[in-house]
Image (cartoon, rainbow, N blue to C red; front, side, top):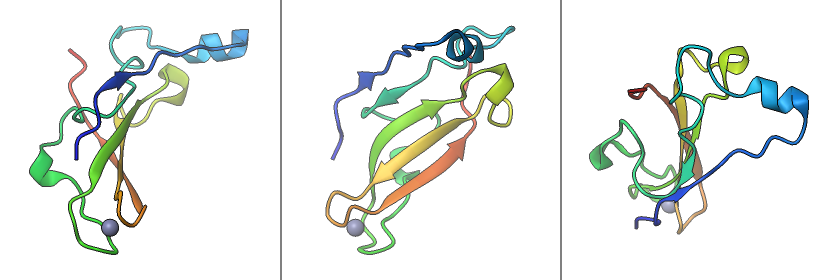
Amino acid sequence: MEIPKIKLLLNPETEEAKSAIGYEWNDVAGTRHFLGGQPDGIERENYPTCKSCNQRMTFYAQIDSIGDEYDLADCMVIHNFVCFDCFQVESLLTQTSTE
Ligand SMILES: [Zn+2]
């Protein structure tokens, strides 16, 4: 199953939140948030398998590093996968391109 790609846009509601977002030296990192579609940097054959039923999981969301202050190991992203049969979830921390 592939969910249609839905880009997520940030909507910080406080000055503190606004200042937490983004990188001083990179305009791409911190903006790569989306639901569905295909994850940056992981081929379908490398998607995790469900611990309950052993089927390949569905890619659900990519959540980027937030910014310089809350960076994930040099601009890594979190990839979230779900099994739509068992509702097991799995997350991977992945290095992707920031070009
Ligand atoms: Zn399953």
